[in-house]
Length: 257
Image: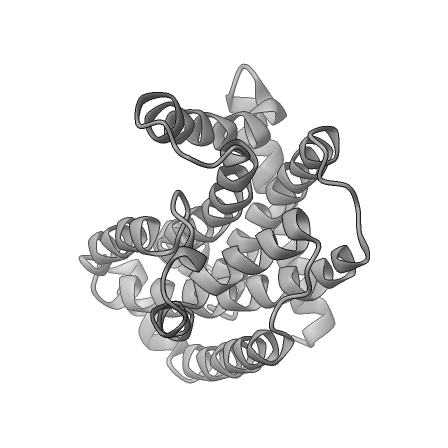
């Protein structure tokens, strides 16, 4: 299978899954934006209404962080079981095992595009005007996607081998939820602590990059952004190679699970 055929098949699988999901739900495609907005509403109620956040722009701050974090967390969690979920198909035809997590994150990407559109409209409507810094958004989104892909493929392979890993993936998302600066500002830390956080937790850096571009109109640290992108791309290549070489083993584990 050529790379072009791989991406075409992954994209088609994602589109079919989106249509199937929408047909099962009464509100259909509305859930693409309604579900993440409900997450935001819960956090806003707790941290702004009940705990009275000192930030005047807390809602915009929260939306930039939470809506982008939901993309990462739901993509990785959903993709982690993608190989196991496809064991019926795997038992009939030999397909690249990386196809299944990639198709899953493609499905999440289409949903996130609608969420981004809503976020941009909200920011402009609340006075955060479009600036030249927004030109950095495509690069940030690409790096974000590469990081998701690397984590998703690693998680799907490990869950296929040991299904209990799915529980650890869920716990990891909870840890990242509280340690990535979604409802608190990493820039309130001292510079050394902030730098350490961004080094150890690339998700925290990416969330801050979105905020810097969308809210402050400031370019992100492009060197660190490129480093994360290159590491993520390298990890993706390694995972594709590992999943290719262990294709039969992963197929056997999925079928017998």
